[in-house]
Amino acid sequence: MAASRGLQPSVTWAQRQDSVFLTIDVKDATNVRIQLQEDSLEFAATAGEDGALYSFQLDFFKPISREESKWSTKRCPEFYLRKSSDETWPRLQKGAGKLQWVKLDWGKWADSDEEDEKGGFDTSALEDHGSGMDFSGLSQGEVEGSDDRDSILADLDEEIAIETDGEDVTR
Image 1 (cartoon, rainbow, N blue to C red):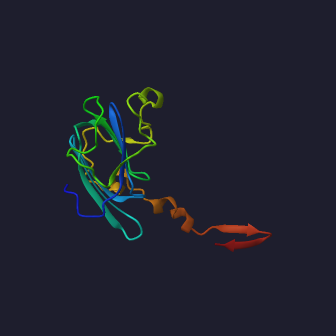
Image 2 (image 1 turned 120 degrees about the vertical axis):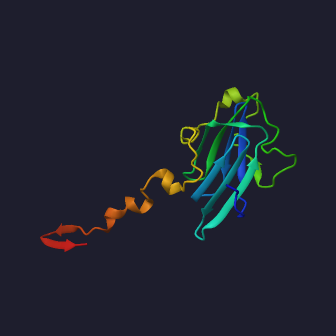
Image 3 (image 1 turned 120 degrees about the horizontal axis):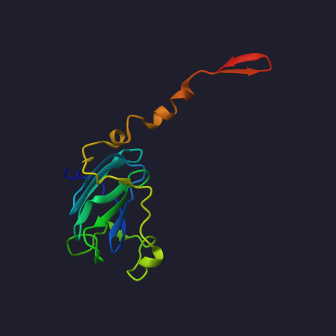
């Protein structure tokens, strides 16, 4: 999947010796397309009332273990990327220079001497996509199943009978 031209979302990141945590600032993303490789991440999604397209392609500083990585697209897309080797990366991206749309997540950041205090990243809300299955060709609706948000509220459209002091009212 080549990331389509779209708006460039902001990405924040933090790391531990063994992992990297990414948050993509695209709230309530739909039509999410993710291509996670050992050396790169391609992301595309639509969001907002106007259905704006957000996309990017990022080559990692060093390889990650796709099989041990997880992600979630529940609110803002988040990624837990397990590094192939335990070491501190000087930057997220492969090439030198600063990417204006990538910033440090100081709330999750821990220097190597603070890692024992802060512990690892909380990945309990993330889904394990490293099972060898390729979800990149599926839409978010297909990944989550056939239920969509409207099906949860479908029974609200049914008429109900209400009794009040002897009167029958149908709503």
